[in-house]
Image 1 (cartoon, rainbow, N blue to C red):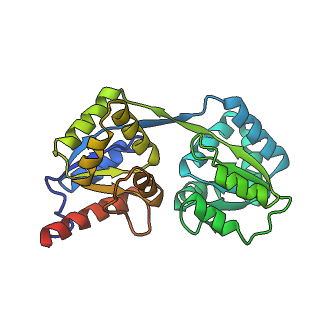
Image 2 (image 1 turned 90 degrees about the vertical axis):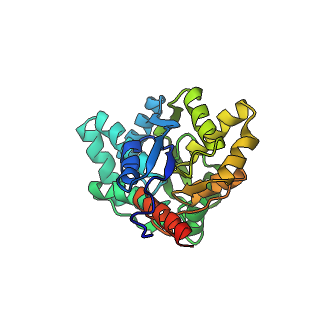
Length: 279
């Protein structure tokens, strides 16, 4: 069987949120039966005054370096800057174009390109540890370094590494993850997994995994959920998601080799099932 046909009639769960329909459509065009179950939603932080003050500070005083952890962070900061008015937004992005840009992985760079900002350094792997490793040989003494946080996670390891390098850190958290669905919808996904009616589940962010296990734990079904995940193909969009699964004792069966996006994930799923049939 060719990879093109390998997903025909496969039952795959997609707990994507922001790009749920896009991802599901990719799979359905290859013949898959997709169970949509959005587990989390991404929203602007309610602490808007703090983000506005951070943007105003950068617009006025600039940065030496800016660390971008997610493409979502770029989009959210763009929205915050636009709402402050043209003068602040122009000054803000002008300052960032003069700063050295450091990205955790490829996604921030994709969002920065339309803003005429290039990525100067990228993590050795698309993780916090990869960013820290990239910066280990850099002289950061006295640098003002902006850090766009991943959701509301304070990213203590990165902040401690920058402080140890004698840099001044200016973190900003422009978005939060909020539960989008009622528990009943998540329980339905757990039921479907545990009944063996899914052949694969494709995770695209760590908060999805956290939410799924939170609901399972509250209902004393965590062990049952782990057994169900062991019996189906568990796909991860990238190493951060695979790491989150491993922390909960779940094996990742497939992941794109290098480009951690949805299209490569669809191709990896197709290759996995084609190989399963052919072997």
